[in-house]
Length: 294
Image (cartoon, rainbow, N blue to C red; front, side):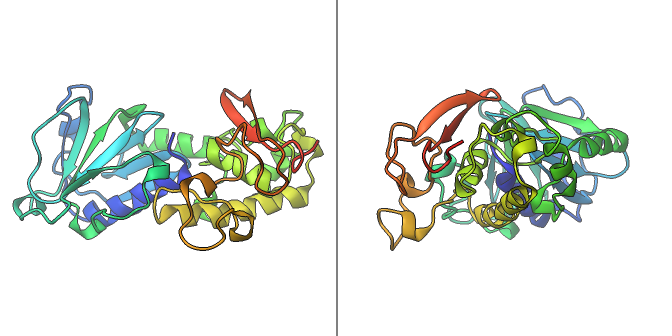
């Protein structure tokens, strides 16, 4: 599932490409039935909070998109391509699609670890986007959008502070590994950042929230505020420090990008202990039993 860095990246790209002008919208698959409500209207702004996107077309016309596990965008320049597959929604700039396509006219993003951000169009060159496979693509009223935002916890990428999160975590008996996946506490944190932030804090994922020091929670929040914006440059999340990688110079290799995420059965870069895996909060959790001892 895309994490907050990717959602904010989409928001920033689509803000540049479409905001401030009338936008055409349709739902070729037939599952998005409210296209006529926003088609041709001016897109005021693109919002991102946690793992949610909001395309604000004016009062009570906010297109909500949650990509879920399968959702993804394709973007391109030049004329609209033929409709293919389970295409939930298209959005395009009527003037831009009449222009010739630029080299690399469209690209569907690869799995995050394979996508280093190269070869993408500049946001100003985007004429259209296609959305496939989202968990949700529907119109929200302003009230419904506000309810969503109020339900979510602070978002490191929106400049939010951690006080609200810290107060709740420090009262909880649940493990910090479970709490980090709670979007009402940490908006935008997903499975990759959960594993890596806990490792970088040298914190056991099984320690209860109430037993985690406030200074440690503040440190985790500060770390998220550094790692997540860096991951907005492309979709690749790199959390290892050069000194800890087998190859300490040059481009970060795929297998060296993370300390523990999906490295179960392999030796920890720091202590050589075998990285473990266990399901926590419905997702696989990865940790080093030595560096993150209870």
